[in-house]
Length: 171
Image (cartoon, rainbow, N blue to C red):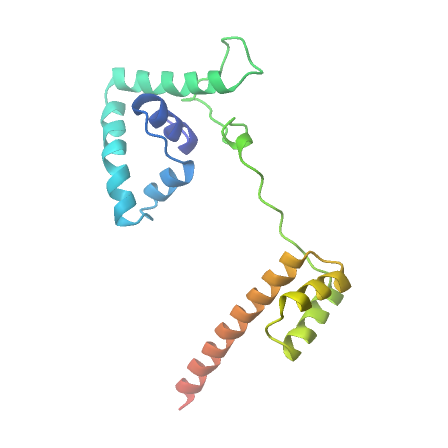
């Protein structure tokens, strides 16, 4: 049927009154769910799949998706909507406009990274006050500094484990 995960999630809500996120559908497809989540979702998706095997069921699913798109797309008042079977661009889906966009990756200048490395070598765990002062000094958000220290600490643990493995191999 060439439906997107968004279309599947929307049709589950429209047809069966069961609202599942797009990520839940994606994780179901990848088999990346906990057993309890899988057991909750499986009967509903199985029912949806059985409905999709019949022409009447497919028609209901497609109508549910089109209805959902029509109801959530206030800018298009005409009935000239695209069929979800042919084309369903997730990026333009009205569902995604309800959620905040993810913050772009922060790229710190080399001078700031060098300064953070220097401070990390001196003090691996900053107090809240030190964190705020450092953020002001470097003109960077305190959350970014906190995440940088967390990631740097994690990287040092991973590096330490790698060095231990190499040392054991040499023995």
